[in-house]
Image (cartoon, rainbow, N blue to C red; front, side, top):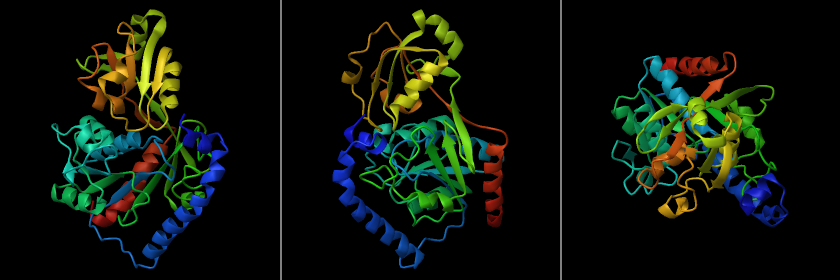
Length: 335
């Protein structure tokens, strides 16, 4: 774990050295919100419903699986879904960039490419989210999902969904850089749904779990269910790597599925892989990674490398209630 993350989640004393910078962050972010409230800065009117899937903290909390869930559910209801993303980790030399089969994670970022490859809906990447929405509307999209962007107040929104890591929650509860928060906990009182990824959900929160049922070979695209894969591995032993916001979450999920981790390596979120990253892994032991890592690792790994796609699942009718909320808010647009 990086030193800064130890300050956020393990109360390392270095947080006190960073505390003076919190005031500056609080001041600048507060002024920006005030300017939008006073209409000095304005949201641009867009004739399409927009759903924000974001968080108030730094790092991966499970936004991408939630975006995929929404795409699948809304598409099943006949809506033409488009996705906008900032494209963290991509070069974005051309903005806005429409993700296609030829666009790589190096260009667009890993999450937009993952979403496009999984769902095959229009995904637009740009730091200017409003322009991205207009581009998707021109392509015929009649509902937009924003992957992150809760703090991008220039973008008007109809539904705000906040994803929370159920294990790490909000760390020390401090604003950046001494803590992991982009906005204070007060912000949670203003959103439509708080969705907790794993762990225990509190009062008024919806619990989401991520479930993986099969492994896919990166090179051949062969699919095999987890139980069959376990039977094929000596002593259930595998290697694992993850370059996500919280690599331990992936490693723990593999343990829960019954795998024994021979070697595990965690990288920072949006890590750019090279062949050197795989040099220390034994060739005769299967290497497992996340789907987000896999979109960047094709051509760099051997034929015994697999990824575990995961899907979002909800308890009771909570998932249906989220979709119903979005549909209800979208009716004013004629959908």
